[in-house]
Image (cartoon, rainbow over all chains, first blue to last red; front, side):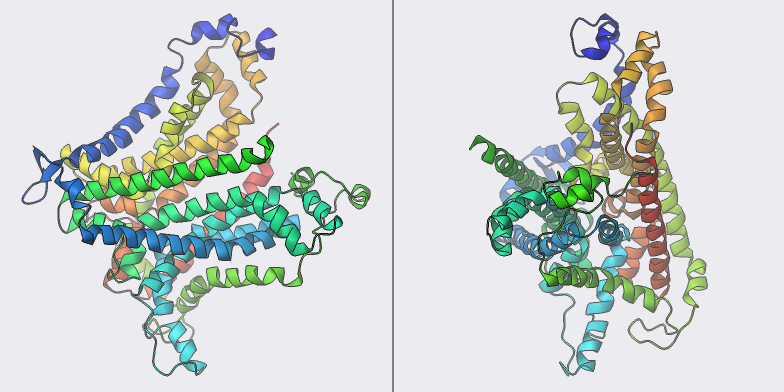
Length: 300
Length: 286
């Protein structure tokens, strides 16, 4: 009886006595598995960044900081900045396109809302490589977009679209747009319509009501969406390779090449860790900002 | 059956008299501009046009991917005769089944352990980390790890690798489900003398079943589609389906890929709709 009412009370003897070994059968297998197959491999990578590559790949255990210093070479700084730039452009475009979509969905009747959301999610459950391949069909010189453009008389010569940075942006945008729409929808859908009603009743124009009521309250969802898009866009290497033609290299391509072509695993590990550190920083910044956004108004 | 209007009704405390008269009416949008649906439709065109092209071209009678010659079903039988694709499909199914089995067991146990025996969020964060970690990092980490231990790569290494992130997703989903459970049933079981394991098997597990099924489904689907981690952890002789598609796109696509894409699309449509129905049928607990 008492244990139901205050389950966390320290004086509940039956649960307390059993605490000792009871967690083990539940926690131990999973934790052990994740330690062996996640923590140790990632730790191993971090360890490798301080050693030299072997002559034919592999590793020589001779301490060095060269891998970290090498990151500052202009070539690599350029690739890193270029990746950040491309991922940022993709994120902003996704926000600009995804926001009106999420807003429109939030205004639908519940039945249509479900349909609309399923329609957003569905492409996301379609194989990633097939969706990438579809863009090759569209953007190729002989592809469908060029055929339509020529058919409509807009151009005479095919425009080369595939294997350009713009193609990478379109491909990444296509891939991750649903990840922007979903959190935006979630935050817009929670908004109390009474707030907007109050604003309009008090004489605000629809635009003003949107700008002063809806927009600020949907910011946390927008931020989450930006993270959901930016993080995978930044580390993707398949799209830059397949529809960017590998000319515009992003950090992910570089990592892949270090592992399979250059056979410089320590440097590949360093690049991957740098990428992870950057992404963790972005995520931490996002959660700090959104905490301030949600707590700010209450503090006054 | 859950009332589909319920979330809207609870999310929007009524203020206008009109809504009190008609509780089923959806929260009335305040004079939404007419053109509001235009960006949505354009967005759908963007999302579906590429997929549509692939599906249409799967019925094309030409082996040229850019020229429509007429309707034909010839690529579908040819798909099933394509050794490479079929082997990739079998490999993928083996990997997804193995990884899902491991992840479902480990994730469910972890979720229960986290909910009942940990205070801070440290264990929880650790268990969910693989879902957030860049797949690239996990992929090369495992490749390095396996090669240090001189483990031969193959489907077994992909199964282990996929089980890592799949465990995180199962844990997260089961935890979410567990948060909604009524703790008094477990307490009653304990008060009546059942040990923690017995309570878990007899009382908790049946209540968690929908969450576990949802977690397993998600793990399976994610594994089916996963490319990056598999790319780093498998042997070239044992590619999963995404890797087969990758090399085909890289080195020359044959039209069977269109047929394959259309069939996979059909599978995802059926799965998404089934999952939608399932969650609606099981509804929220209590």
